[in-house]
Image (cartoon, rainbow, N blue to C red; front, top):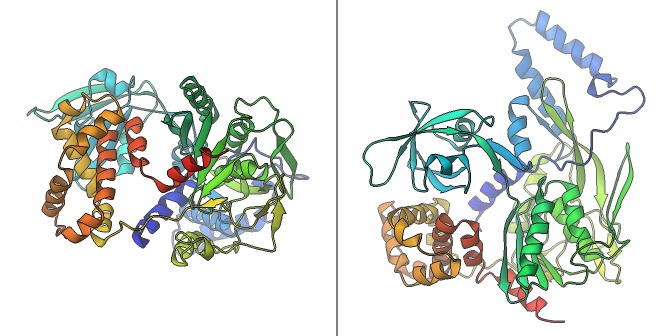
Length: 531
């Protein structure tokens, strides 16, 4: 992964790592009834009042207050954050079990909204929209061009259940604009991306976040795989930035015998709270490995830490992010909210995995992953710096370390053997994804005849996709370098096959192809094959 990709991922990651919700809003001490009773609030209110009444120029007091709230939160720790009222619904929906909308997955290409997939049973499918449609109009107004952004599309298409939105759609092979009136409905937000039999007796479950419905989805995935003969499990938490702590606790409980510590938390005004297993889990005696990487954070680290400290299974991959702080959301009177850090959590061995930070220097904290990349941590286990003074013991007596994420039991470096400037360029410009969409759009009838990822893989492998992709990229301005293309050929084909399959079969056609030759997954399978 190059620096540009890392910066993009960091921006996305920290936009959704505002905090992890835990329980109900805590009561403030003594005479406290929220922020309004803090001793210093009088001085702040007084100063704002003076500025409003006596300052030489007219001041937007609302904007100034919003900036002040954001600045105050930034002085605390990297995960306390102020959320304006205008953003709260969107931020909360990330971890909710559903939202209201029309039920499509889309991508913006050439300043046009392309429908990649239509959610089965959703409002758009019922109305007649299909994958490949281009949305040209929204509510009788043109909606194409530079003004089209992901945020604007979401605001246009989402809304209260029962409300209507009019769409003008251009469909391949049809000259005229097709008009649809779609009634918005509840759209599920899945956090278990896929559960499938990756090998005989081995079930693979990919969990992308810990949302309100994750535990229920996880139980369904376990039941589905057990019916297919699963007796061992790979739980993939790579790039899982966290979410609700209780969902992670419930998931861990499925694998632990009774009475085992899962996690505990404590803070200045937050009494120690423990979570222990009840012995009623469905997978207590089944082998398990957990996959993590540098973007596995918070609730992912709670799950991984509990499995590791209880010597219940092995952790495979790279050192996790290192977030051991607990947030609670405090709703304010104007519809905004503060996600405030109220406690630290500790793994069963007693270690805090929170990496060091300096209050008020969030930028340095956010750049930690980049620094780890530059120091070679993703490529060599010897480059990993751990706090050797923070040693702890697992149930079985193994040494683990605190103060900076979960260290895997088995380190797997990133694979850079196929990285070339050509590959980086086509990835950075999104040409792999764009080609996959165009290929499916032009061959949809044929591709829809395949019902499994194995069928899709066999067909795509027989096609000359590299030649077609290079021609596509050349037309976009990328000069072909066949020496580099041949070095990256396997990776290019893997990505192309996976994205094409996803556009037809969804995630069930994507992850099996994406991880077919994944080194971390292969190491997990090797580990599970041993006693």
